[in-house]
Image (cartoon, helix red, strand yellow):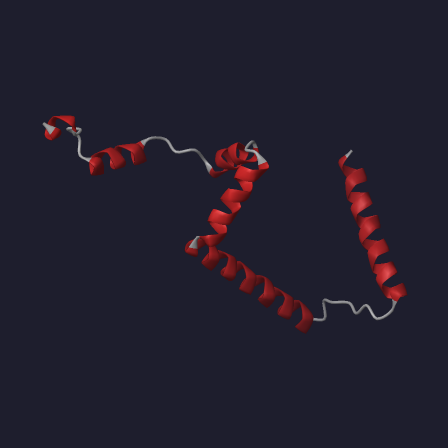
Length: 106
């Protein structure tokens, strides 16, 4: 009969048992995910992007970044790039700071 084919352990119990096992850390999951082919990583990205909890967390982080930007602006921590020369000087500063950081790591 069909009943003999069903497991004797209830499904709910098996789920609880699985949850009590050691779960990998986030770092271990990230490391494993990086080893996947690009197509699989892209699928994971789409899955997470569609997750409502992830979307809420992203919105919280975005709002915090915007609030930080508004506070920086109000405190005068910004620059205005009006001319091409302004932009080139700004870019040159970024490049020199980055090169200095890279050089200090060696």
